[in-house]
Image 1: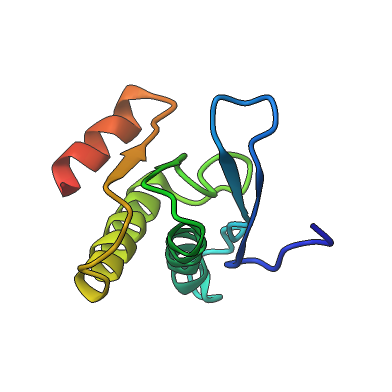
Image 2: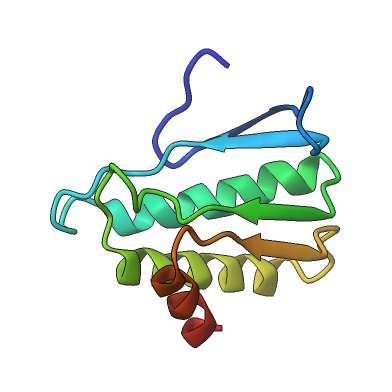
Amino acid sequence: LQGCATGDAKITKGYHLPAKFVIHTVGPVWHGGNHGEEELLKSCYRRSLEVGEANGCRSIAFPAISTGIYGYPKEKAAKAAVEAMKEYFAEHQESVIEDVILVSFDAGTEQLYLELL
């Protein structure tokens, strides 16, 4: 892939995975919230959706980007993710993407998504 900038996304084949493609994105490291982290995180979701759309993906699954070792607070990350996706689909009403799956590692993250949706 020759690298990927924070907030950007690139696609590869799924190879031996049960998915046709894998979209790779680089989330921001949390530095307190005053270093553009929210916009970079939203960009991860937007760019992933754009790349998926451009490649005819009808479904896409997202983990809670940046909430692991990158330390992004789960509440803020969930809010940014949902906002980015809502904004994307408001602007792309004719999208070929039919399903978005939000994958949660724990029950707390799942509850955050449920409350926001």
